Image (cartoon, rainbow, N blue to C red):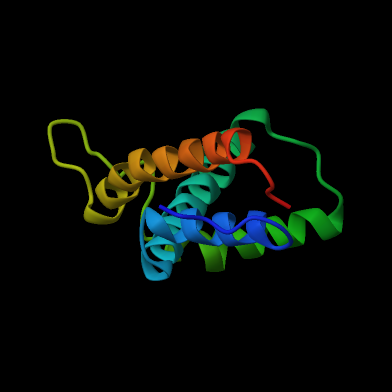
Length: 119
């Protein structure tokens, strides 16, 4: 790839590499998958295990999350990759994208170190 140098060149490379590994739609789906997994892990696994002392406002928010957010999580630790089963499509797509995303970030970092005149 040929990259410009001078003002704006770092932004050009950042934009190039941020979209080179996938589409915006793919990234949004992956972000949704990760948020769902993290929400499930925090509120269904970790939070109950540590049993924190909550004030009334915190308890009210936690109860609302349990009632209205947790039942609507699509990808959870329970269904992402069931024992003896296959990976859920969204989870599998997220994992597949990690490799190409890592390679794009690695290439971007290498370009920043080796192309003179980037600003």
